[in-house]
Image 1 (cartoon, helix red, strand yellow):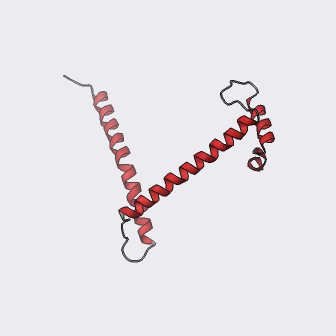
Image 2 (cartoon, rainbow, N blue to C red):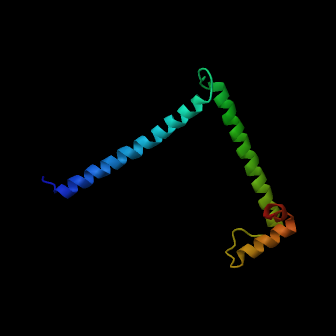
Image 3 (spheres, rainbow, N blue to C red):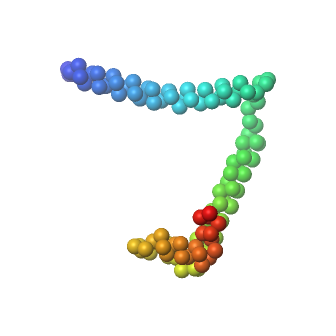
Amino acid sequence: MKFSPAKKLAVLLASGALMIGAITPAMAQSASDASSNDNTTGTAKPASPQNAQTTKEQRKEARKEARAKKNAELKKLEDAGYQPSKDDPSYPKNLQNAEKKAGIGAAASQ
């Protein structure tokens, strides 16, 4: 099987691009780690599994709270007459009217 020089060049360039794409995130990670270590004195301590678990639980709790807040706001809008599943040509106007009725949009738009 014989390949033309153009095909060989294309394969070489594609493999080079893939290698650069694979290496770049690792280099960026090590550069940010090095810059964060420059600002600290002494040796950096790795995070313990318990600390990592606590932060994961905190993130999970924050997501739950944000979801509950979003769902409560959507419920208020639906009670004020907004129908999100309806394909409506006057979409922004209906949402704004429901926000005014529910008293939600005033703080967000300012």
